[in-house]
Length: 397
Image (cartoon, rainbow, N blue to C red):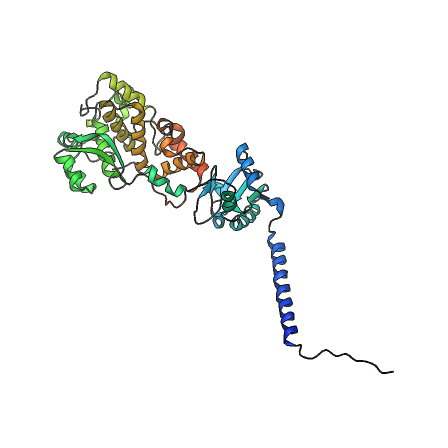
């Protein structure tokens, strides 16, 4: 019986070789993909939320929503914090303390939020999901994306904040009285010719604060707030509880640009004309104005910014400016003295759907948002600001 032998060719035809190479390459890629999924524990369908599900969660208010995309390209309204996906461990203090708290992460497309989810799980968090499709899917579904990198233009306008009052001879009076020691002031504060004129000749320019002149403005207004006769110094803590310790505070003992002891000038001059009724109004407003460097209101101006804010209030009350406008102007000056604090507050309100132009200035200047403690709590809620290095005011000349 004849036997038939079939022998494969030693070298496959070119076409068959290409098929072998294709199958081999595909197999390796698939193997790597599944091994990768197995090693990293990439997500299942149960680890994601849809746009619709996220909207329901946001409406109920029972989640911590975190944007992990970098660089900053906007955020979903009601976002609680921004933590770059590769900074999760480094900035883990911004995460909820409760490891079982519901957290939803998102990025632009979903890739970064996947990686962030895995990292957060390694930190022990058990209830973490991420938005499928990220901001792109959110926007495609009609959702709004906020771009808070533009907030700075609203909080810290390029042209600054201008009061409806002028410098007049305020600088001259302070210098002549010795409240400002002009030679020493000139050594410490770098002044423009226009600023120098305010102290030596007077000026009809409106008082303006901006990013470039904020130090000059706080120092001159500090001197004014110190020397101006005020109900704050007769009826407030500096006139009552601390009457025998008036020189022990940063606002008094810290003013080293006067001729002699600064306390000698406290509450001594009628540089700004105020009636008894206006003095009462100054006191009422001062009690509602805080600053992020301290825990006290302007009723107890124990630092330079407190005394400078008091001067702003006195100038505006003297000019019969409406109370609501006074709070708005003081908020503007505070913002230039403490830019990061108020950009943080503006972010907090923007994420809740309120623009900076629509915030209640009196509320923002209150203890909840503008005291040292209040500002710290808001900062924890907001987390790191997008595209913003940390800066801030200091209580010194």
